[in-house]
Amino acid sequence: MPAIANENPNYRTPLSIVATIIGISAAASLFLAWLVYYHQPTDVAGTQLAFLPALNATFNTLCTVFLIFGYRFIMRRRITAHRNSMFGAFLVSSLFLVSYIVNHALHGDMRFLGQGHALRVTYFALLISHIFLSVVALPMILITFFLSLTGRFPAHRKLARWTYPIWLYVSVTGVVVYAMLAAYR
Image (cartoon, rainbow, N blue to C red; front, side, top):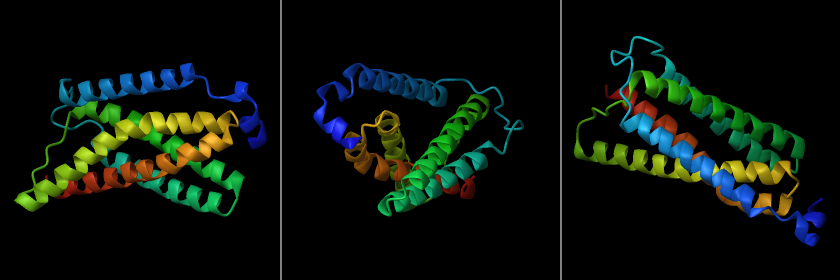
């Protein structure tokens, strides 16, 4: 299949697909920004579904595990195991997104109450990089999956080299941000 993708110009990824994925990703990011920063939460007291932040961290942890195994599998040329791991990462990331939306619709944004300049700088540096890279990662993940699912493996490999470390960073920092918020309530 890779030879077909390299030789056949009609097998190139249509720009309309990439533009659609980027447009959907931008709309999703704008919705999440509105939800986090402007939407009035419906359960400010946090009595409903209070377990959601911990569930989100669990989904991020599982995503990290799937990503690491997926990488190891592809390095060993275990294509089926790699594909299954990446679908696992995509599934738990999707579940994370649903849980994240519900959590923020109910409870709003959690405030970091840690004290000390170094601690606050560390937290906000992690948070800002996590948010920025999650916005970047979303279209990259979707395009990387599209390339794989449509058999465009040379392009998939090229983009996956960038997608993987960004997705992994977002998953790991999501857990770290949650841990810091939980520790300093």
